[in-house]
Image (cartoon, rainbow, N blue to C red; front, side, top):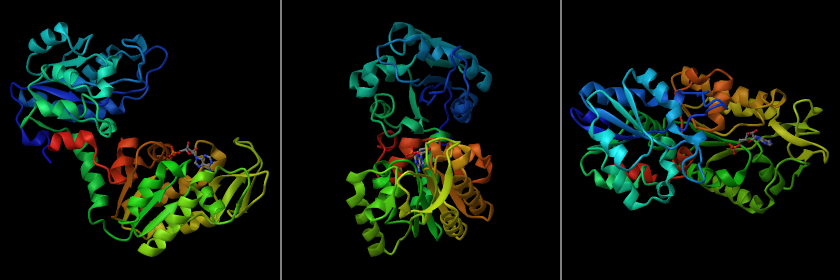
Amino acid sequence: MQTVNDFNFKNEKVLIRVDFNVPLNAEFAITDDSRIAATVPTIKKILADGGSCILMSHLGRPKEGPTEKYSLKHIVNRVSELTGAKVHFADDCIGDSAYQLAAGLQSGEILLLENLRFYKEEEKGDLGFAEKLSKLGTFYVNDAFGTAHRAHASTAVIAQFFKGKKCFGYVMAGEISNARKVLDNPARPFTAIVGGAKVSDKLLIIENLMSIADYIIIGGGMAYTFAKAQGGKIGKSLCEDDRMPLTLELIEKAKAKGVKLLLPEDSVVADNFANDAHTTISNNDAIDDQYMGLDIGPKATDVFCEAIRASKTVLWNGPMGVFEMSSFEAGTKAVAQAVADVAQAGGFSLIGGGDSAAAIHKFKLADKVSYVSTGGGALLEYFEGKELPGVKAVLD
Ligand code: AMP
């Protein structure tokens, strides 16, 4: 896997696919710049070599071409502050003005291109659009893990125009190497914790992990589909009835493969989906009709945390309950602490992006685990065993 460390970028105009899809408030101020900050080391390496950077990204989901709200011009100043470099802005990502600005770019300078998704061709993976973008630079770097599972023009299709002159940035390289640590010969026992709302979103990852993990822990809303499929009463808890047969198949598969599948024994149940609802503890197979399970219960929490603490490798994707509400955060918080304890004891714990990353930040444990992935969908697909188009295109 070649990264920016393997090249010298003197006099190269390096076209970098970054993920600057940052949240903006109503005044277009950035409310969380961590995605920009993550790519700064890649940019600085290239500038320090004597190269220049042409940054391309999407922002939001513009439907109909250029839209003020989704303009990358709002982040020019922050990119300049974080990199300490002069940043020019091209108000169109292709076309004469972009080419002129790219041609005039000096070593040590940055050109930020307008939102790629102002062109429908970006998400369609249009070859002609990718070729037009490719003409802006002399070298291609992909540092956008969050979109690596999409075969878009700038994430995958463009790479073919840079034979021998393409590589990964530090964000991509970090994401891939940390995921590989879990997938290839993990230190054992290896426990995968899968939670979140819907079992349908996580079926493929559970199936793939069956061939790798020693323990698979299931929590969150998805556990109730398993419970009902096994004949349990789950009250008003989340359930995907059409997936019940598949959950039974997963239970059988785990037995056949000798994987220990841990399902929650009990839950914190509530009479309402609200923080101030009336709550009680119930066994998972006997939830009263008026109640819904919104967090794992104390017995499940103990069993899960014990298995996690006994592990040398842990992958965590998806919360154990509705951790956004304080009444239903205890299970997720305890699991987060156990996952952190594994890393503190010398093991390896990887936090999948999305809601598990939000939870680990909420409980202020992000610096106590081995790695927090930035890519929700991309990481999920990687652990489903799929080849990510944005990764493959750079390796080809
Ligand atoms: P996902 O995006 O599939 O990882 O799901 C994360 C979401 O699932 C979070 O917003 C949680 O609030 C929600 N969630 C977790 N457990 C439950 C539950 N028992 N009932 C309803 N929602 C849940």
